Amino acid sequence: MPTKPATGTAAPSRMAESPLLRLAASREADGQPFLQPHQLLAADRLARLVERARLGPRLTMSYDPARVSSGRGSGNSAAEMSDSAAAARRRLGLVAAAMPTDCWGVVIDVCGFGKGLQLVETERQWPRRSAKLVLRIGLEHLANIWGLSAGASGFEHGHQRHWLGERLPLIAEKPEAPA
Image (cartoon, rainbow, N blue to C red; front, top):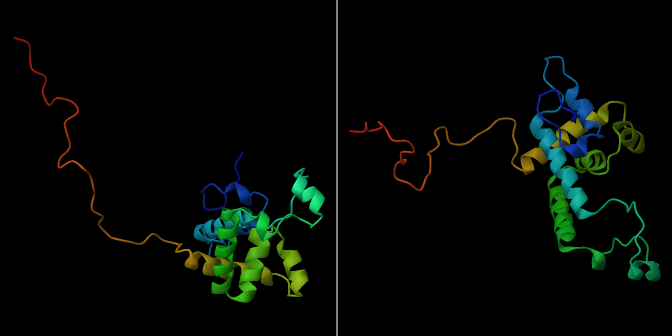
C-alpha cells in the first residue's frame, strides 16, 4: 500500500523510509503541512541524483576480476564510474555550490544518505529540532534552484496548438435516411 503525505498526493517510492514523510504529515499551528509538495519533489529529485551518482556504499559482492584482484578498495573510483554517474556527480557539485553550506549538509545527509534528523543534530552538536528547520530552508533553496514552486505559474491563457486547421468530424452530423 503506497504511503501518502498529508497533501493527498502519492509519495515517491524512495522516500518511503525517509523522515521526510513524517515531517510532511505533521502540521503547523495554522494547519499547513510542515513540508510542501514542491519541497518533497525536490527531495526526491535529489535522492534520485545521489542514487545515479553512486555515492552510496556497495551492498552486494562484486565478482568482477578487476576489482577482486586490484585490492584498491570500494570500486568507486573515477576510472570505474559510468558517464551518467560522472554527470550526476557534476550536477550535485553545482547544486552544492549554489546552496548555503549548512543547508546543503542537512539536505544531502537526510535526503541523499537517509540519515535521521536526530543523528544530524547530534553530529553537528545542534539544539533539538533545529535540523528540521534547516532542512525546510534547504529544501526551499533546492526547489528554487530546480525551478519548483508551491504554485503553478505561466501564461494565464495558453494557446492550443494542433496540426489541423479544424477538427475533422468523427461521426456524421445527420445520418441520411435511405430512399
